[in-house]
Amino acid sequence: MTTEPAPGTAAPMPPSAPAHEPETAHEPEAAILLSHAARWYGNVVAVNDVSFSLGPGVTGLLGPNGAGKTTLLHMLAGFLAPSAGEVRVLGRSPNRDPSVYRQIGLVPEREAVYPFLTGLDYVKFNARLQGMPDADRAAREAIARVGLEDAMDRQIGTYSKGMRQRVKVAGSLVHNPQVLLLDEPFNGMDPRQRIAMMDLLGELAEAGRTILFSSHILEEVEQVGTEILVMVAGRLAASGDFRAIRALMTDRPHTIAIRSSDDRKLATTLMGDPAVFAVELTKTGLSVQTAQLGVFRRLVARTSRDAGVRLLEVVSSDESLESVFDYLVGR
Amino acid sequence: MALTETSSLTKDYGTVKALDRLDLQVEPGIIGLVGANGAGKSTLIKILLGLIPPSSGRASVLGLDVVADTHEIRKVVGYMPEHDCLPPDVVATDFVTHMARISGLPRTAARERTAEVLRHVGLYEERYRQIGGYSTGMKQRVKLAQALVHDPKVLLLDEPTNGLDPVGRDEMLDLIKRTGTDFGITVVVASHLLGEIEQVCTYLLAIDAGHLLRSAPISHFTQRTPVLAVEVEEGADRLVVALVARGARAKQDGARVLIALESDALYDAVRDVVADLALPLVRIQQERGRLEDLFRDAAPASGIVQ
Image 1 (tube, rainbow over the protein chains, first blue to last red):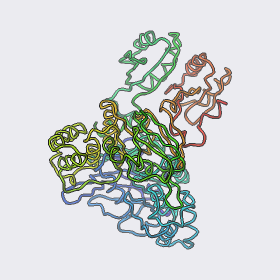
Image 2 (image 1 turned 180 degrees about the vertical axis):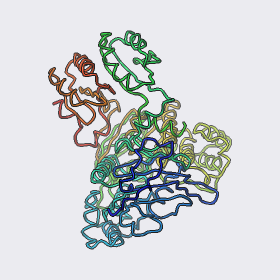
Image 3 (image 1 turned 90 degrees about the vertical axis):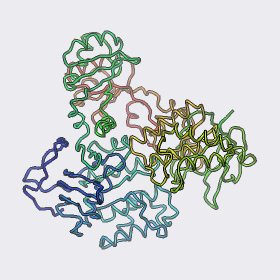
Image 4 (image 1 turned 90 degrees about the horizontal axis):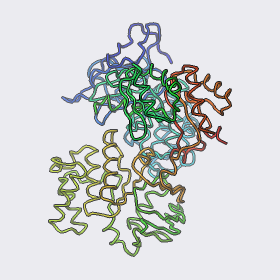
């Protein structure tokens, strides 16, 4: 990486995105940095005043259809200039400085692969575009990473959807980029391929790459990592660790489902604690509401022991990524 | 009557065997069909629809032979294809009515059924607009409506949530579930998303390389395992040490502690240790099997249960 320290260029985080630590002036600039970036098409505003920064690791890019995810990825990849504000990748502007392409790998959502090329030729072609000295070797390595060796000499036109998806990933990895942008990379993959791709993203993140991938499948995003960016109607609704975002949703109390050996007795005891403000007996056990999750978590075991009740199950019922996402998109 | 029965069902395309002596017997319900890409799912669907003949072996749908009774099968089966197959310049009502007419419904009945199914899938005013201007979610609904319009007994859905965002997916899954339970028709859902299958299906059919991998009720895969997972915000390492000191078999797995659930007294041990160490307790939950384990080599809990 050749980024210079850029004092004072760290973008201020918008108030809706408090989960990120602000960059200090002494650190080098984040791998991906947007500052008040916007993109409009005529009167259609696809991305509206978005600021965030991302460093190494995996981040899931979420949002309803039409929220501006693809436009955002295309601005980062250099396909589109921001209509206003600034987009920087590794300290450079991707749509004005092509040298940064050497450090960006992109997996577009559309199947932009030539059906008449073999998998190996396609990846090799990408390697040559990126000026790799030994394109053949680089291509074979990238193909091995996505586990497509057996099919690399077949034409892409004969591939299944999951194979085309993987050959695209191999093409985006071949020059070993610092920043990887993936638009719905799991689409069309079967369960085993999904697991392998998640593992691959995890490995690349461990190795210090900055990875941003969009997805609609929340349970998968949750398996890959906890860092998310959520776009809603062109705006950044939140960014950071989704559990930290959940903690900030103070107007929504936390709900914990409990099963115990004596639900009624436990309910009575829990109701006596100021951290708990509602307890409901349900068909399967107890539903407890608290505004002070931290306090509740420390008291629940002790309270049950004091009441002589056996705890069979304690589960947060609204801490999932799905719950956070629903809240942010205002469902 | 069995939904479908196959015996030694084989389909080869030249040298490639898409299905290899597949033997199946599936009862009606909401059935999830999973398999690796190239495992033969699409081929199986096409054969069951009577669109392509098997190379050898036999297959039947609701007792109808897929080769001899092709026309009868089309009356009882509705099919929602995966790819975008809708004419953009046709109004949704006209399209679905047309599909109903093709299935042999008289004009009036076709109109009435169309109005009903479009309402069922959640298209109201939009149904008088051209399909080309529809969102992905609306197009998926039209595809489902045309599959339902002739009142089939079996519905085959190929990746019905493809391209939908989380809200759209939830709505579609709910719709599939309602279609299966309210109308009492059998639904076969082909999908790669195991979470989805777990959510709506009652039965799982997994095929791999043209063979049957597993065929069992979903509950069979998601049974509780004799492992208790305990999650704490901090101090998982201390929790393990304290539990092991009490004679439990426990190991740390990231933020979680997995404990072999040998007796019910273990619940008390967990509660007491967490209370003694004043750890912030996030979760106590018996581990369940997951559909995903079918496709993973080893489950994380396998180390402590043997």
